[in-house]
Amino acid sequence: MQRTRDFHYRSVHDRDAFWREEASRIHWETPFESVLDFSRPPFAKWFVGGRTNLCYNAVDRWLPTQADKPALIWVSTEVDREQVYTRQDVFEEVNAAAAMLRELGVGRGDRVLLYMPMVPEAVFTMLACARIGAVHSVVFGGFASVNLAQRIDDAAPKVVVCTDGGSRAGKVVPYKPLLDRALGLAKSPPASVVVFDRGLAPFEPVAGRDLDYASLRERHRGARVPVEWLESSEPSYILYTSGTTGRPKGVQRDTGGYAVALASSMEYLFDGRPGDTYFCTSDIGWVVGHSYIVYGPLIGGQATILYEGTPVRPDGAILWKLVEQFGVNTLFSAPTAVRVLKRQDPALLRKHDLSTLRAVYLAGEPLDEPTAQWISEGLGKPIIDNYWQTESGWPILSAQPGVEKVPTRFGSPSFPVYGFDARIVSESNGEDLGPDQKGVVAIVPPLPPGAMSTIWGDDERFVQTYFTSIPGRQVYSTFDWGLVDADGYWFILGRTDDVINVAGHRLGTREIEESVNSHNGIAECAVVGVADPLKGQVAMAFAVLKNPAGADTPEGAKQLEGDIMRLVEEQLGAVARPARIRFVGALPKTRSGKVLRRAIVAVCEARDPGDLTTMEDPNALEQIKESLQ
Ligand code: ATP
Ligand code: MG
Image (tube, rainbow, N blue to C red; front, side, top):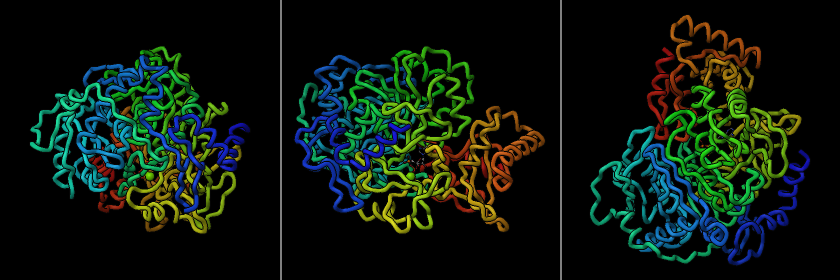
């Protein structure tokens, strides 16, 4: 791994030269004057004075070589549609959308909020915003009115673009009534709402406010909207964090740094090249979707698949069918999707020709070793666990096969990505920790190109939230706990507020989960620390079985609980053994598929679980409650 190390070393110690080279991957209308302005730490400004545009780099720039090649491939198993847009088609659509926004008075720096499912018009609108220098804020379509209203108030958009509805697992989800309610709650709602009517959920347009996307597009068909050249640090978008731990933060991203970071990652992280096909199963409402459904692949000259559907409809082979059909080279998904597949017939993984596929990237949550191994063996492909955050914009830790092919290890997202000066630091004195010592994953600023520049409208909160929690030094805290082993492989052990203290022993809930998951009857589990009068805290485990019949009887459940406890004890020692293991049908998750441990703890401690607006399925929390009786 020497090459990876050297490469990383250069990226943080010879920063100017390194990033100057990388910056040449994108088009600069005006060259930058300096690589970095870090005169006001922790704020970093990359490529100062350079003027560029995300839309130009994603679309226009590839027209001379790729006008007729697929750029956006839309597949919806929800409404049974497939549509391939060439780069030229995307160019036309984006220009029409940009003209539409301009007609509504949207200009440079104005915000546009999108509340849309996985439809091409959402991508066109995002790129149209970028083209005219407007700041988009995409709100995940699964969010309810309250979440949406919060974000509307924070971003203060001039226009909202939405659809009549979406569809999830075959069921229509009306969006428009949710938006109308949110606009009723919002303090200063925008004057115009553009509705892309899919004919899914009938609605009554609000006179004088609601406009029809299709009519506007028709009117502006063939329009050519000039690119607005933005200074590198001007904002490209605002994206709210998932809200797993509380009130979401509006992450603000720059323009030039983001374009450079993504362009470089297409080669170094994904080992990809122009002309490839990239398939990311995330949603445009999340950071992974922004970076690797929309901007990354398009800036890298690749075709991107926009998939509206689940991994198991019409059956558990759908992802692999699409890989074969479109010759996918890179697949990016999430552990939660793999855990869903784990409950399906493993033969489905081998049903299709996957010869074009180089590797499968997974991010968003801890990827436990048994799950990683299951999917890796099932597919016969490398699995690349990569760790990042909405804040970072692109991976902080990952294997970098385009730099060097170093063997990965299950359970580890490998090594710090170039540009990220990542450290494991002591929570008590801020010092760097050595191999195998558990500490907080921190990043020494400046944060690299592509990472958040601030919290929207609140520089103070940016500094306070991220740069003041580690004593003695100004470093960015990820609020995740980790360690580096003696060979240099990194491990994420859970969020800092998930660390539990059992009779004086500090344990990461992640480690215990990993151990519970190694029992072959388990599909997934959540371990939380619950207050205990004697031990301070005890671990409680909630597990979902691959086959629910395994714990149907009280005796069966008792037996299984005993087996798993013994397993954890063997692997981690008696202190780590959960006080109880309860079997449930589902775990409470956020709409991005992350386990809401905070809510589980509250229920276990008979407290009010607090803000549950980001939760996907309230019934899962009920099941936890019932399982405790
Ligand atoms: P909020 O910050 O609002 O509570 P969130 O942290 O869930 O929400 P995201 O930015 O979507 O919002 O998630 C980033 C977090 O997800 C990381 O800080 C980490 O806890 C977890 N995570 C992401 N990828 C991985 C991974 N590969 N391994 C372990 N954990 C991961
Ligand atoms: Mg977070």
